[in-house]
Image (cartoon, rainbow, N blue to C red; front, side, top):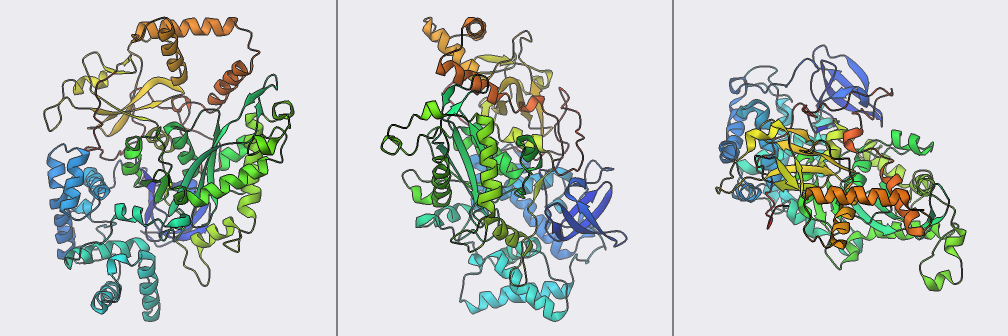
Length: 636
């Protein structure tokens, strides 16, 4: 299944088995589109859309003899670039070297491999190309092609600016104006970007900045020159809330939670948040990213808040905290699969996260007015009895934060913008008489697959007895084919696995050939369900008993012992109440293995059946061959 559905003008989408070309957005829930067969124009809700026809397993690429000579040349040039990766299993390092040799970003190589993998024909490498009129026919008028080429030539010949540093949005606006004067239909943002790439290749003009270079152009105070439209740059940060919470059962104080926040730099709109008693981790960041990308309808309903929060879609760049507990490798599969650039804030440079940190401070300022606040510190708190005055549970403060963000902050006039973050965001999406909107962002077709890609990442070899992670063995027949496989250097090949910390079984295995995720159960099916936190507690219990390197059997014995102690204990202490509430909170959102797939844009509550034990969670997975192989000193 496709990773994302493009809603930009000119993109192709499907409603059932009917192919449509996107004209533009109507609102945040629907688009206007043209039937490519009969030209009829319809308004389609986002919940009706898919990336391919329901009657076809795959949308075939056009054969080479159906393309113009220019298109054939481009397709074959692109195929020559990826040919080494098509014929051989390449590591992430080799892919980066291949990209550098050809003057492109490494994710461009992965993207081209995905497209080629759909049909195994070079013509699939032509962006947005369909065989609709035979050889020599183009999707846009030749006069428009001439305007695009003339504009590029004019910029290059004038030598006033570097054409590689002119934004696509600026190029599109200028070309759009020229087409309007000529009475022609203007090309889309995507078309302009594709033509520019072709032009630079033909003219042998090297790009002066790549995606990695752009990461270095963050300036003091958190200003982002590239944040030109919604979801261009998204900042993420974490902070403890200055508030003592109580448990849900006894209403006794249990401590302060952490809140993770994400803000759209262009509009200053808060895109999402997550709340937890657990310290910030790869898992909590993944949960937050998913909250940002997916629509908020179901979430708002679950917390009982009636509000507008039209923040969804795949962002271009994520700026994350470069804390020690985060490993950049965990996000590589997500970055390459969904074409999201992950940037890491330099250690000791808080100015690189100015917008989100200012908002986090503002949010805690609001918290200081609530009962149970700890204020900014001891001096501010004085003799105020925070624990004695605490009244909020974690669910109640989640609802409180939702109201604060969606109904107050996002709607209030921003001092720097002059309008509310929501209005600024809408202006960037839909535009007005003075501003060209970018249209609705790309959306995710398979939400469950997105959530799996945002889980912590592990690379392990596969043995005859299966795969082992944290001393626990997993097995399924799907692994047999990969036993004893080696990489390009002759070493034991490592494979991509994902694990949901809320339920460590099943383990998710990505099959490189089938391009699908498969669920692996415990090898010993009698083992009980366990969270990663319970696993850690069991290992700690083993160490207390003098077992420094416990095996699987000892771990599960310690787990059973701990559960018995918990059942017998009278949970009256603050630590016990906090542990109980933390476990309840973790269990509020079901692990991925216990959730059904659903289309969050749909207008009904119908959900499809959960994953089959050995079935793909998506039908047309992307090529992940060559993803970074994480080297480890030893496997657990």
